[in-house]
Length: 425
Ligand code: HAM
Image (cartoon, rainbow, N blue to C red; front, side):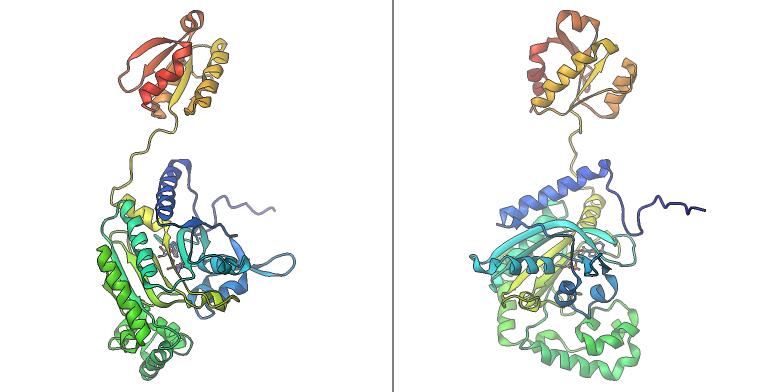
């Protein structure tokens, strides 16, 4: 017996049907435009990379690399992975194309699907979409501030004025080892109180214990050493400069010394943007500095910083807030004919309209005139052009303005001007 084929998409994935895709186009357009206002240019990288890139870039001990990657062998037995995030790919492209030889900093943005084998729930998918921005080549704290301001600007423009921006510094290569050691010394004696994951993290990546969501761990780690007490002078100055710059931009933030983020490449500044009202997965975006990622994945030691916004979460926040714009109708002009013999005239009118840049369509189902009008209504078309016997003999079209139900005849040569006038285009 042949097994029945599954006709649902894989778990954790979803379709964006045409009724939804207008929202995506709007959101993506807004993000692109804003990024370009800040001097960012688009980069498009492949959706799969050599597995090693993420192992070295994102980090062997992270949840992403340990549990969440879609890794497969291709026919030549190379290990490839569907990208779980975009930063490592950007670093790879930065090295491969020797972009470090160009004037710095380099500002890139990207939009596209990412893949993580995570437990699906509201706001968490296995294929999801990110807008990301990366700046390579500068360790200037004002770059950190500018990026954060851009992220806030994007969320604001999308219609979410209320946000909670969390800010921290996770230290650098100089000061983090001593902080790490302090954490290990604190955590070892209370190991038994921690969850299985955190017990392993003590040796592998003790900073990650700080943001474990497990209630037991949260209680156990109160009173943990604070990273700020271990910052070196450079880290302290950098963080102060970032906060001062944010103050000048009048962007509010909360310093959160528990914020460590889930990827290993971060150094210094780390941040996350939370939005109320979208459920448990309320982190709309996050990012931070990664001053040694480029070196880690095989390039020169060039600093960088970036962030990514989860588009599903941002869009659901916008919908929740009722902030979606009203979209103009997909079709602007609908041609209705009273009989098959007028279809050639309908095609002629369609061709003219489309050449003039107007979105036009007609009936192909042999509907009655009444049914064609109903279809025009359903499509929320503002203008219908009626073609029947009278119009054909007189060389005219009848225009119907759907909003006012007004109907009148025009000369065929006036079609485009008349429609434009109605649409105010
Ligand atoms: P991330 O915090 O892993 O950072 O992801 C950024 C955003 O992507 C999250 O805040 C969330 O909105 C969204 N996101 C993550 N996983 C999922 C999921 N399974 N379903 C839906 N949305 C999700 C990064 O990816 C870093 N590459 C950000 C970065 C760029 N850091 C420096 N440059």
